Amino acid sequence: MSDAATHELRPTTSRWTHLALRVKDIDETIAFYLRYTDLELLDKREDPDGYGAWLGHSDQKEFPFVLVLAQFFEGHDPFAPAPLAKLSPFNHIGIELPTKADVDATAARAEAEGCLAMPARMMPDPIGYICMLNDPDGNLVEFSFDQGVYETVREKWG
Image (cartoon, rainbow, N blue to C red):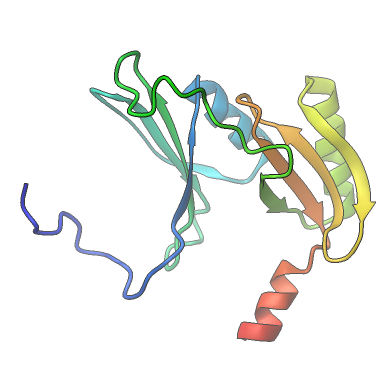
């Protein structure tokens, strides 16, 4: 194996780039995130070990952050026989929505589709108004309004 880089574009400093999840059915998990979030499918591939997919936001070209999904074929999972790990009971993926009504609509849809883990409720600052969903593998996904992440980042970092 060569030490030469395969790709020309790289960060100039250490960067937060992804969160990776092992999944049991990559197509079902992709469909969940496309249905409940504004994430877009950046890439889906297959190799001898299984399937991989990257989901992200197309407007994050300068500093990309992607959700990596991996479904390994039987006998090719480097973490077997360990069960699929879940982000729960508190560990979660956080998605901030523009309005409180968006959180309510997400919670209502998730309840109707059987994946609501926690109904919408107001939590102490800085948590804001949130609901929690279970993705197809049982990972918690938080949908929030008014958490202050954007405001705090801009206040502290410009």
